[in-house]
Length: 108
Image (cartoon, rainbow, N blue to C red):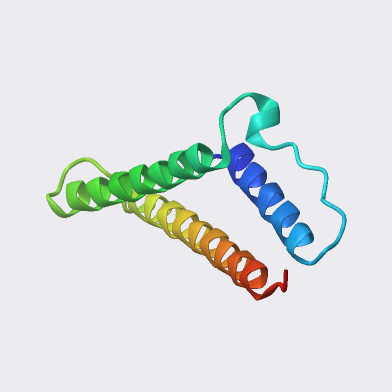
């Protein structure tokens, strides 16, 4: 997931949380303002990027185990990138669930 996309997703999450808490909406430089599409397409793209990172890590690990010309450093860096991307995605998911639960608890 690129840093720009992650930042956009996090800004939209903050805006959703602010709305759920009844506060003022945080200024968002979201994907719609940047002309990149709606939230769901940005989220899908981010998930696809995380999956590609995981696959690249797996390929480097497999190549290393087969004895190909891949250094252990490359394998470890790819593995850590994959882990960090997954953890960031998991945190976004958790924030989305929290926002949904907060909205569902609101009385109309």
